[in-house]
Image (cartoon, rainbow, N blue to C red; front, side):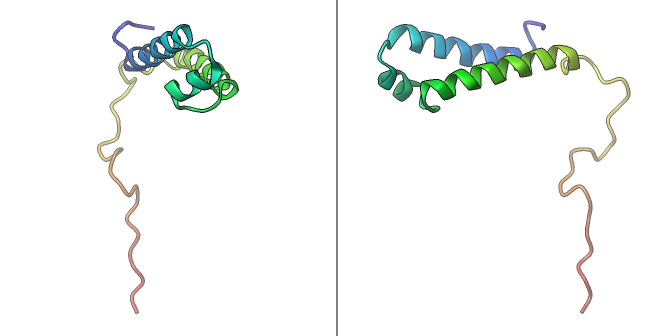
Length: 87
């Protein structure tokens, strides 16, 4: 994964912050309070899920250019204009 890929940059930042917290706080209650994203068991599940996503991202390669240009109104919201019923 390229160094400048947004997913990599931000995920590494989260992982490094959590690693520092794990090294600093040996007490699980203090660690959970510091990270404030759940219990230690939940943090482990989050890390496992992030690893699964990272492996998928390697296959998807979202940092590469699109094969063809995106549709002009791809990011418009709502995706479809629904006419109000006439009463």
